Length: 602
Image (cartoon, rainbow, N blue to C red; front, side):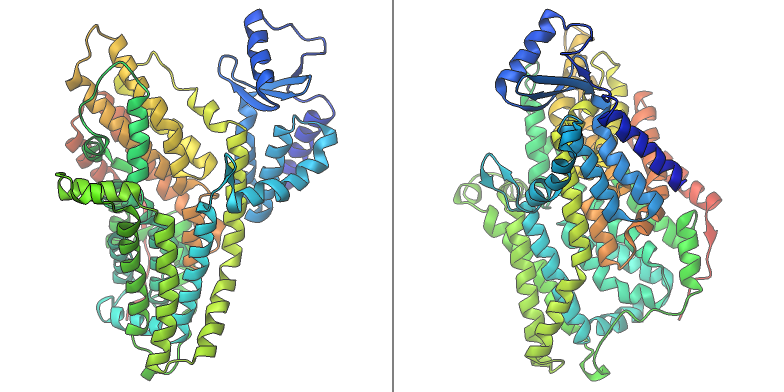
């Protein structure tokens, strides 16, 4: 299989580089452009050199000086597919990402053989640097750098509280209640639901905190990573007060502002709240995990991972001092400081006198605060404080000295390097994908003469594809909301002389919901997703193993979500019955497909 893949990639590269590739060189013996097409090319050329997407012909136009080439837009989806396919086949995500980036950069450079070496070096000097601290309009953006700093500081804190016995103390305390593998999994699920305000904080805190407990009961690292990953974005996406809410509302507002057909009196926040009754994938995901835990059943690759873990020697993932210093407060105080500071940071960075002195309700005021909040700054404040508190607690408790605590923190920083490398490469690939106009190509496939009630099904599939290909829920929302909301309103106006709001609003609310849900679904399935990477990192699980075991579960929940939120919705089934149907189907599937494992008990 590997030799066939290598041969195919070589032939593909040869076709692009030596045989002219799938593009048309307008200086050669190809059919001439029509006058309108010539005007489009001339307009593009007059702007600047680069790569442009033409929706009319679904092609990518490469311009450099007097040279102009055109090639099919479907090539823009090859870089992420190459990266994902190679990662799954060869189980080496770093090389897979580099190859995906290289193919994408080579495409951006017009498949010119003379650009092959410069394309290789552009991976490092352009896209990797932009991924770390990219520029937008000449201004330095620190979002990705903030995530790196936050992740590294979390790694330092976790290592300190492992060395000072805090993790051991947490395990002993929780073990009094979580006396079995099933209860340990439920405790992990519950903690994931409790840390609802941010998916990054959720992934790193829950995975690192609960790993010693699940290890004790021989729960596989793959199962832990799945629970962590599937309680991060789904909870953050539908909770009322999260770091997501401001971004979600801004994109919904863009979609409403992008149409001039209908004036909608409802605010973006009220539309978001109304859309939650159609949030099938996030809610089905949480329910699916609960049923798996309750029935003690698994299937597919996850079953194999669980069986291997149950039959393996008990892992010793906690390194602590003697029992006298292994107190749960050594871990609880830094972790609670982290959570508390995130909330305080969001309030500080998002607050303004205009919001708090307004006549809005408390919920609307909190929404306004979160819309203005700088979540990155809040996360950095919180993780930095957590490290300091962890060191201070170690000193006060006598668990470790200052020098030992600092060495532990540095060792924790080092443990984060592999994941940070994957994150940077994934972001670099996302930059390539953005320049290749992949999202524009996929979104242009949305039909504009479709039955409005079937639109949520189409939007779910397209959003999932974009999220899977880009590894980003937020980028997917940024692309789809401004496109899909106007389409829903436009089609509703075409099908009648007057818009029936009672008929339109369910479609509009479901559209808002399915874009969000599909963004999370595609993110769960994608090996290049940052939250997927962070979940495998915090769980100390091999990244490809996490993707391989999680994907069948995500696909099943995604299929049921499409069936309920797309197909059955189009046939007019009420939303509350769709939940009942989905719950029953998921329970039956687990009962039929799943097999019980002899889980370790105390």
